[in-house]
Image 1 (tube, helix red, strand yellow):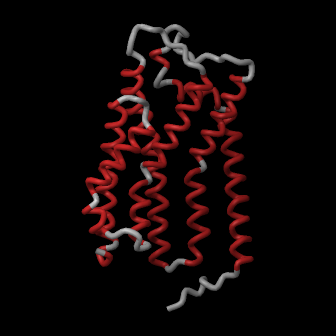
Image 2 (cartoon, helix red, strand yellow):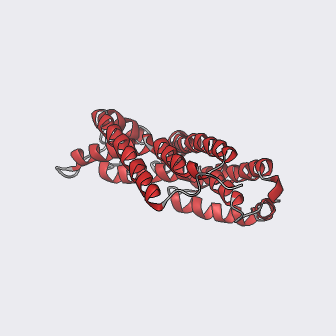
Image 3 (cartoon, one colour):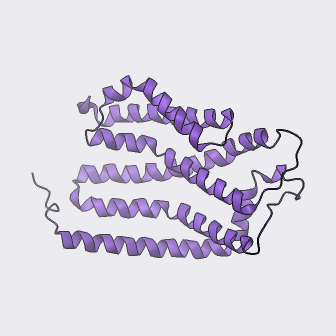
Length: 241
């Protein structure tokens, strides 16, 4: 049976893509404006994990250039808008793809949209409440030096690692997608566990702060998510075994 929406013209696809991009840009801009007004609060929230170790600067990040504070608030607002607009991005991606999908596939993509949002924010909360406290407790207590951390360097570190954790927690959905399109099979995933552990360990070592504690605390949930992907793929795509 041919999908009635499959014959949409290239012009229609491009027009649809443009409208989706415009809509996403509008939402992103609105989120940016809102985050700009609350940038001081967001910056304080971002600095919270490391502030107990900044005794010499009374728990505050320092500014080393005249423009640092202004640029910090812009980066914080951009980061907040990026995080808040992630579900909007996934929604528009799904809506762009949905005309070419059957009803069952649309239901599947709606579930993926919800799951991707939950996993993304779970990754952010995981690094903020678990990885950062453990990492900073280890890293900031090595030696007897008093730390002075610039807001520029800390924001670069925080934004990069936070977004990476959020995206890495999307691993099960990526695996499910590869099984769905036939690139991977469930049996391949089961037989590749030892290779998966090695790959995940390398990824964990690269993206986390340079301490074994952070690496392990990323590796464990990533491997659990890998096993979750195998289990979910078995439920959804048992015919592909």
